[in-house]
Image 1 (spheres, rainbow, N blue to C red):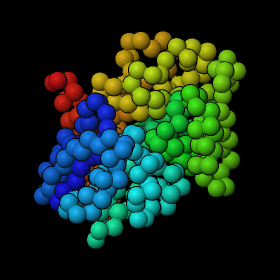
Image 2: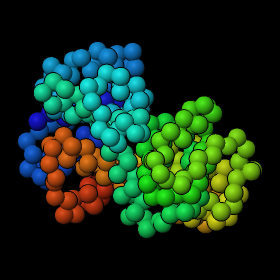
Image 3: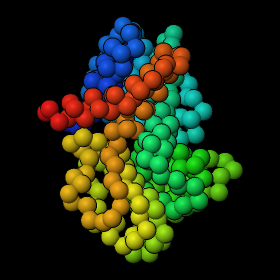
Length: 272
């Protein structure tokens, strides 16, 4: 089987290492490649993917939202979020899915952080942020404060909140007006953009979760506060495992596989 990741940045992806490890451990005969595609060549790549014997591929920034217009179908999750991070190729039909949703939820659950009826602060409003908001509303968060350079883009996150949920989304300009009851902060901004000093006035903050991982994650030594910090390696691994299940169209046994994959990737980073 042939899988890959569609990206456009200088940032090194650990997905090839991750999926090669998954396939070896599960006895799946396959390969995983990296495709670097500029935004103006996205349509060409999609057309080629239909004839290139690809079985599926992951999608990263900046393609998660734009790629939707070139797909044949979306899963309910991808349609609700308005962003795709996983595409399956089935009989020349491209089906978009979003595994960031469950990847984020599993990562947060592993940290033992209970967010029900709590207030949360989110930095960024891209494709990954949309999945985060969808997950948080499912977990019944009371308020999500959003900080983003483009107000209109941040305000569009409100459409991601699941129907029937009581979660309220508030886009803010001035962090001085933030509630002091925020328990969780999430960074979905790219490496080098987020400024941790913005968290100084949050006395009840318990956890800062950074969706970046490895060399692109925050340096814990620059953080000033009593809160815990976690980078996004766990989310990467869980969403990757869910992607593989979606491509294979069957459930796959974990049996500690995701835990060992996290250790594997940390080892790869430390050896570089």
